[in-house]
Image (tube, rainbow over all chains, first blue to last red):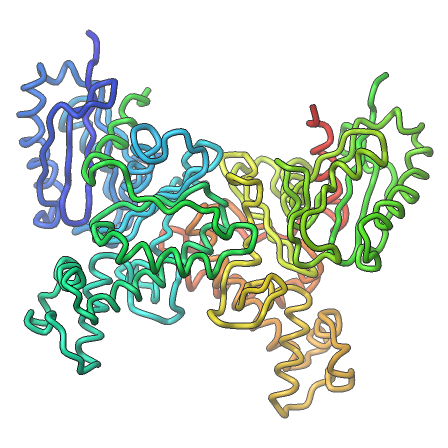
Length: 318
Length: 318
């Protein structure tokens, strides 16, 4: 029996996207479910199975599938577990690879969602041919996948690359992880919305954002307002980009990447976010790196990168 | 002609230590010269040659030596150059591998001094058997060598691992590199002396350090005072350890090392520095890493680690 396909699942804090992928990296069919609505992991697995099995039947049944690769927050490649993910509804240790493989009856592997995106980008996207780059995902949280010497850095325990939880402002905002001042609390989509609320509450200038109830403002609203020329909204992106640029300069000092690749909802802001990132990164780089580090948006569609990267894991399951 | 030995040179901002090493990592003979007294690289090379050639003659002449490996600040393994090292007397780009190989008539290679120390520690010291660790050198400057997946991270350009120039206090002290608030400006030996002067100038408490002219205080004085129970001196180590611990928590989020290995003059302070490092690192780690990251002092003598690591480079020159 030849296995022709693999399944890739990109589990995010809000949504989970999935697809069936062939050996050339073609996504044959795909779908998505809401992660956040499942308070129990079992109902999540059930819905994922029910949605996926229809796609599996379309391509010829489960016998055609070699395995399932998943990218998930705090997914650990070594243990197959999701461990203490601050942005998921399920707390503690979730043996996700075992749950998937028991339910589907085929092998499963998991890694960090941002690691999966980095692999997708390296094999099929903007990082083709690069041996040293950092992938930063700006979504519900801020994730990262670090490639050095052509290899993903997993670290001693499989959890390397939690750059969203490095400190950008000492004693700053409380993070879902329990720490204060994590990069994620300022530069994720939710961090941007938090900045918007802070500025609108403490300042008096007019802004189209004031038409939206404060507790409902999201990063998309800020983006729309900024595109329309709203000064407060532009200031929010300037601030977000400044913190990202400062953080990136420190990341460069660590692994001296050829490029930092940006991925996720916030990248839709384009130059509104990229310009302040570049300016502040350059201002904080050592002279040896000034003008040399590429800042690139992902070349893959948002869902594809992580799904492709996750699916690549499944080919390698022994 | 069989090459039985290699030369290892550890160039620091103040001193350069060197030795002749056999294939088992035995240092047969060693010596040192002052780096800082040479305003010209040519006179440095001359003194290094004159000192080393005597040792070479003791072991049977230059024909017995396969090559020279050097660890140097901002030493670039790929180009063979020292490039824009803020703590050396020579500015700009120094083609150090070529200068050494022309002078000695044998091949030469260079890397970052902290990378060399990391290799020394991995092969002969506290990191034996580890595949993921970070070496931090606390000397005239603060250097680092990062090992992931059992390999040194060189980065795209050969300059990875400049953790001494990550920002620990935004808009803080001016660094030799031109940036502000670099970890090195607070936690190198010179940073500790700078902290001592700041505290003594701005505060009124008694301290044995007040017996020393302010501009002459060095980290050794602070150490001696702290061992003697001086409260101000102990506070200086607390502060230094706090900043190191905060920085280490972010380094762990990057590469999830099994251990952070400390090396260099400041480690002589023992628990005076290690206790505040550990406390503050733990307070800033994600839950997944709390209580799990080893903090270890180098198992090699200060000179040996970097000399051995540098010498290991020479075996690999093609």
